[in-house]
Length: 402
Image (cartoon, rainbow, N blue to C red; front, side, top):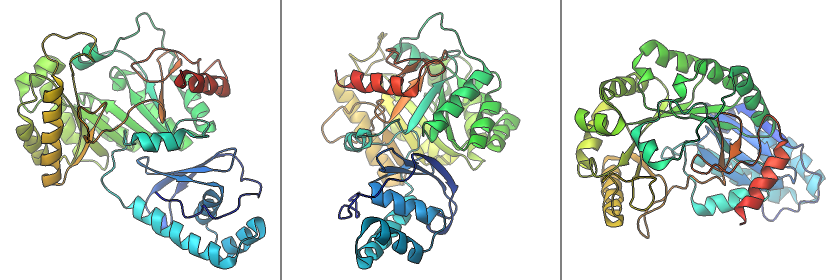
């Protein structure tokens, strides 16, 4: 968004660096809000984990004062003292910021798991000290077939325990990361997973879950996740057809996954259904979306096994023109049915709506605590429990420039 605060001078000393958590009031009533102030005074406003606004020093300061409950009159007084600008300019910019933030907070077509364009990412990374989100690989247990095609899993990796993961969560909060995504493998198989979610909630971090949905077939478990404070989750479905799903994900998994989806949809959790398209399921997209819509799904994410981009190909990968057809079909149907749609990974054609999942705004922590760019890249920048965050971040920035 265009920043209405560019005309402000920024010679005043910045606010204290840190991350601030609010259960929104006023213009953000009912929203969960995180404001991260960088050492240079610029800010990152995160609303409900799925919406980001980038703020210069003066905009960040006004937003923080508004969130702290200061009146417009008090903000105008403080800002005129600190920045030596006319009262009329500050008044106009407060109104502009309020309008922009309120409009952005009310947007409904944003996926909390991944949504930034390349332009957004370039803006995000300039001068920031940590990513917006960290993906925690709790375990590699029970990886589905899709992962076997796409990911080179590390063998013989030692996993840290529950108390160590809690320490990791504390570290991430202290360095200003407001959003965690639990992934794997199947993260719900990690011992004391619900306890980790609850701990993150107590710390103040927004949490999401990538799952096959099978554990959620147990309604008590699903309700336990809600009670623990989980904010959103994504369930992977291979097909609306039992036999196709079971071939792609695992024998006998379809029924549990669908029951888990139904249980989740009966809760307040924001739920996205994800499908990886292959030779076995890409010709029945309309039927899949119709099935999901009947279940009450209105947020869909997708990617594809594409020729040349998989670890191994057993005749399931799609050609580029087939991937293009998948994207075009998904876009047309979801627009018609008013369903939120996000395409993960690289686009197959110019003009395709792409969603970047690269590390510039999210990074990854392996089961042993090693920090990497993403799940597909095992170049370690250090260990979150042993090395300083500055060392890890500096290595990642250097790596990105190669």
